[in-house]
Image (cartoon, rainbow, N blue to C red; front, side):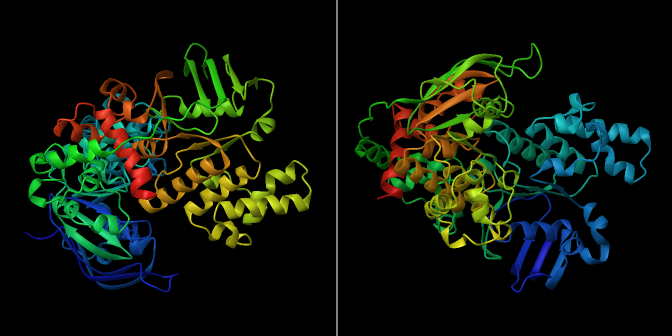
Length: 569
């Protein structure tokens, strides 16, 4: 069979760079295959994708050595338009992909460019919209849709052109767990119905493997490190060595001292031949003893009967009530559009509640201005670029103190101290533009920590980051939580983060509080997970397969082992 994509001794160097981004790539992908591409940030995954969809060299010029054929043709000969007829790309940021004012117009865009007759256009748009389940949204504006709906519209926009290859760049990055699961199911169905070739680039390995893939390509430093089956790569150590997070059930087997073998089918917890591992897992579980729970501290933040609506009689939040204790790390979870960000905006004073009370350290803060609240409650947005207003790191971190008239000597002392805490002191005289995404995130956290807040609220602190950067930012947050006693609330879709780093999960669904419990209890409760569009952890399934009576206890012991034994010795 002839490959649909074929790299031979392929090396690529961007025009502005000294060293190649891709080195000696040899890769053949065949029609109808589904391939998952993983690797740490900067490994060359995105550049490989840009070569496949024609952005290299047509939008990103550079030097090419070796050869690349798409559908048996050289991309340089057929141009980016020719490549687009064979390869359709669904971007991580779907908003950057919309053209039309309605969903129907957006899907039809490629057909209009091809001068397809109106009758055929209506027929094709209706057919592809039904395939991706957006046929009821054709008159809606794309920008008004949820994250999952936007992604399906983007899929329809590339599928309508009958492309042979569908390339998904981080399809799960901005989706809640259940919507992400549905996206993976949909991609799987499209592959089966159309026999399309599917390429998925994703950091969230376990979620991407919810449906089977033919191969995993592991990249690092511009090279292909491994090209193997899922069973083979999960059995070895390459993923861990290259900073990729293994599925949780695989991590649990390793912690229990199991030697994972390809023939036991470790690619899915459902297919795993557990008899080989069961006794060892049970023994490990029984030997872990959890420490006694510490007594509750004073209350840092209390929400009482909070109600809010943007439009009258359409409540976004209804009767929200919970307490957060001083020094806690808490996750706020729920599906896209559940009201989590609205809640943080109410706490910070950007919005005013219709009813209810917000107490900070026991005092009602209804009469406090945004500036006054900002001295005690810091909000870190998902995208650091939306928070940064100065060119230099020192100036950005000092800004809040300068605005409040603090003396220059004290500013310098406080800024230097917080830069050391955040691991940014050596960069103090650098321009922010020279920093990585993760470093910029730490600058935004530093600019809030310098105010000595009581509470830090972070919106999706780890979105789109690989496991190494995820671990760096979370270990840093955990350190400031422990050493400085700062209370931390995290709005997140990341179930790993919720399990690993927080002691409580506040679950919101359709504007209502549906649970306030430990992450282990939430992610082993099917009713709560379904209602809030979360995803039951694979540790739950592993516990059941091993005949462990209390899956939530198994999850709690796994978390304790990961946090205290594995990571901190």
